[in-house]
Length: 390
Ligand SMILES: *Cc1c(COP(=O)(O)O)cnc(C)c1O
Image 1 (cartoon, rainbow, N blue to C red):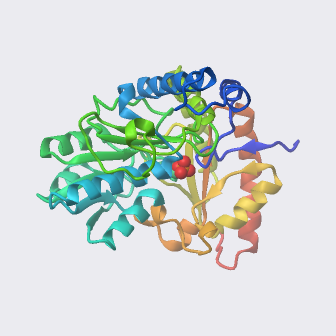
Image 2: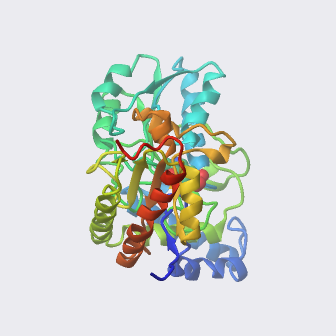
Image 3: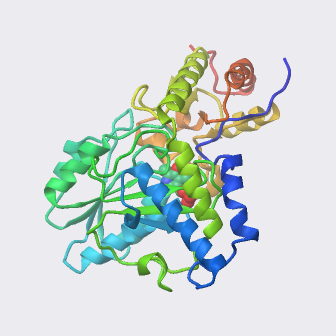
């Protein structure tokens, strides 16, 4: 069989699309004016930024003035959580509720706040990776400032009952933030219908470049600034606007929500075929909910296989994936997400995440299913702990 290049790590980042490149390039070389200046190349930039703001707002069911551009999803999470914490601490509210399997942009922000006098409740997820609205309701106290629960998990793809969690928070008068970086462009979102007060998103997960994000802040919700500086973004986020990347994000999110249903249906079919094929490999298990799951997310554990070794061998075959273990941080600890859903360390270590996207084809899935069983078997043959699946 002929070797192919298969990019199956779209949850880590995506290729910048041609339509996004076409939209953004003129703002680097031609309309390079500072959007706050008065002459015409600056006014062109300003107009483009407001047009992009309108596109982001439309994709979320929000109003343009509720959208603030940031440098990335991580900044949006930091701003929402620290900004709300600082604002509400002044009213004696110093309690935050989150889950134990959030992205580190949320978890490490919460840990930082714990060092500065805030109390954080980390709700446990169930074996599928789900949080229930009842859990959130029970955890809310008179001094709760904020609930922050991710919309969809980046490792195992579980989609939370966001509207119901939002309803509980709204009824109790508690702010609700959601990290929707993985959800945008994959599931339909409407911040009004889903009772969302703040929502983080990132450009590079939806075919815009790395280094651009946005935060939706519902009209009437006031949080402290995170970036202090000039009067950009209605005085709430200083820093000269990154016009080209803002235009890119506007184009990317418009493309992402255009025909979303058809795209999701196509990817769901590919995903389920890939999952079914991968589970034919002996002693394997699917991580995350089989149905309440992002349309492009596949996460499977193989017993007696080391995740990093699996990735390197797949790379030799031309396949880009990701493993559950967080070796990037210099530690060999398995993923906190896989531990949170109750996987033993050794099983969590042998996990493979494949995330499909707009570019993924039927042939890509065929190819993965052709090479993967052999790669897993080779690693098991070398493993001192593999017992033949008995
Ligand atoms: C990628 C990601 C982030 C971080 O976004 P950046 O733009 O890379 O900072 C945050 N949360 C989730 C769920 C993500 O997948």
